[in-house]
Image 1: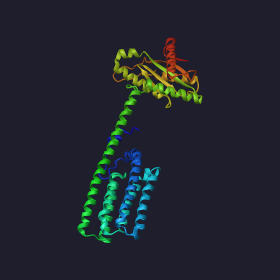
Image 2: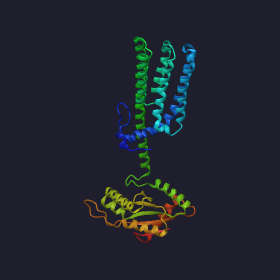
Image 3: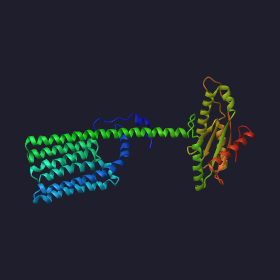
Image 4: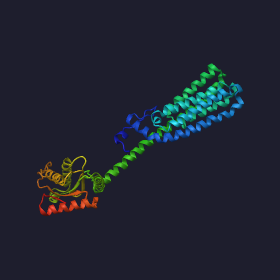
Length: 385
């Protein structure tokens, strides 16, 4: 869906959180990202649960028999959390709370691993703390957490790790520092990768929306007259087809009004094409002022215009609309530095539909014929079919 070009031009990211400074643009990005985040998070949660369970293979080496049940209880609770959030990805609540849910999984998987270490000898730390590093990488690059949130989780796990092995189960300072270096390095590498990936994702979003806007502009140009901005013949045919289908289903009467300007060529010849273009734009403005919002005013080319009037009610109402349109052109057109243009008028043909075997092309053809009949019979006239 195209969005405001001004909104894209004013897009800028907050340095640390990588949020768009414009709240509306941020909300649009979140909606844009949620389908891929759902798929990505489901895979990440399944892989994370499997990896977490695989650490149980090390238990016979380090877990004393009396602590096996406690260790597996903690591990099972964390894995159940993985699957609970996996299930929530299929519900709309995930759209609003995805970062909170993924953050809880990341944080509690790390805390669960540290809790399991409390039942093991200190010698197991050198084997199990690598799992903490894996969880840190998983949080940054695979879980679906945004850079800022993954950084918070990584720092919290680092702080809890140090509290645990300084206060609760003291380790030699040198050994703890070595572990800290590796955990901090994992955080730094993961944070950098996450920051770059999220920034590129947001920049890609802006480029895609810019391309969407350009495609929309090109499509609009292809369906609208460049001089007046009115729908062209192609778009008019589509809207007539829609009107035919709607009026047939709902037993409503519509009308096509073919408008041809009289004595426009002398204006072009006298004042030049630039003034002629100004006159055509003024005509378009006056006609547009007369039709209803539900109607369609189109320019077919040259000095020919067309009005599609939906649910017109009666043929007499269609002729009344044609007369209103014609009267709009009687008033002189005032241009700077030129005498008023007074000799502009229009012949209008009306075709009321639906009728048997009606088509959009035939509606235009019939109203065109009615217009020529009006032109032949009397200048500045209205004629109906």
